[in-house]
Image (cartoon, rainbow, N blue to C red):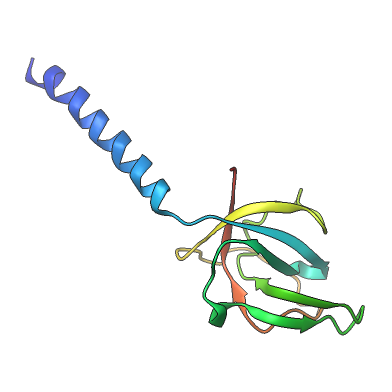
Length: 123
């Protein structure tokens, strides 16, 4: 009988904790600027404030000659959705727990010197 009385309270506590945790995660809006071969992707920050030391203020793609502002290289290549194409905008969070556990080819395509592991989220 005690289990049936306590169980609803535990469920409410766990549900509330998850919602609070998600609200504290900062989300950002980005755009896939360059979809280079072998997951050498460049992402532009469109909305949100990321520490300037973690992104590149101005970067020139040596293949196209085009200059991009407020960009970073994709650091989380294993979980980036393949359905996002160059020019697509999306929302993301910074993924501090990312672990690379997939095989990626090593062909070179230029990308910014700074990278971030991110997780694409629904807004």
